[in-house]
Image 1 (cartoon, rainbow, N blue to C red):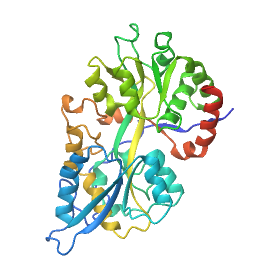
Image 2: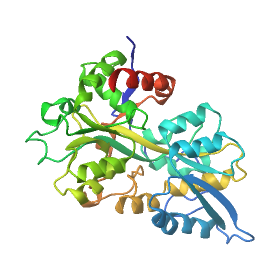
Image 3: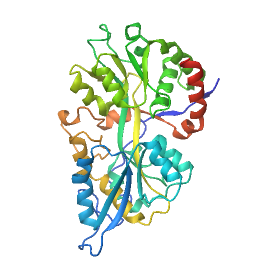
Image 4: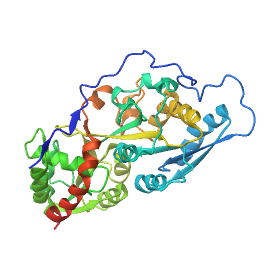
Length: 361
């Protein structure tokens, strides 16, 4: 049996005041960069590795203003976390900036793939949630968005069962109506931790977590690896509930208007997407300017209002309608649980093997 405190509540993490962390070469907010003079010469190519979703929004609202201000040409390489990280690992990559979930970014740090950032060049760091400033250490990039993993369900399909807790997933009413994240997905380890909590543990207990998930397995319709699988099953009535990121609830509601999303009583789980500079980039300062731009009130507010990303910038204010469907506000963020990604990566291979042997067999 292994016990380890590997999750920390975010309640103790507070937002710093309005004191700047440094004064670098980038303007603070609402501005695409530092230059006070019109840039000259051929544009500098900045290669960004990212997921590729909401491409039209990013081209118009994020990339184009930055390109104009900095005489830059942004080139996007799109793909999922694993394939993009592997490409950088293989060497010879031209990527300057890489966007990854904290789960994969920690792997990149351990592999020595990222440059140490100069925080004095990113003054907008002072305006973001404390937990987002250095989620994987001061030397590495911030989280530009924080989402949460909670539970979505169709109240018309749960037999009258109201879901309030992670433990409710084990209710008889949800048997054969439930989907769960695959253990290999970003949220897989979060479900393992949630199962440990349902078993009554305050410190992570691997044995009891596996036993709990084994007991749940007969009622699981499918372990999903992509959110689109959840949406399809949900819209077709194959499932009634399951853990999902809040940002995708809008897709569920488009298909099933009565959809409810809840933050479980034990707390949701923070899913942080980070941005880092790839080792050997010839455009490190330009990359830092771009990070600063992405953290600005201008970009963060626009992203939030069209529900592309949940904001980490604390200087913007959203109406209740604008905040619907995204993870927003100090109170919400402070209640999320955050996994220790070093602990996750050190144990993940063993967990995957054990899950496949003990839970799904």
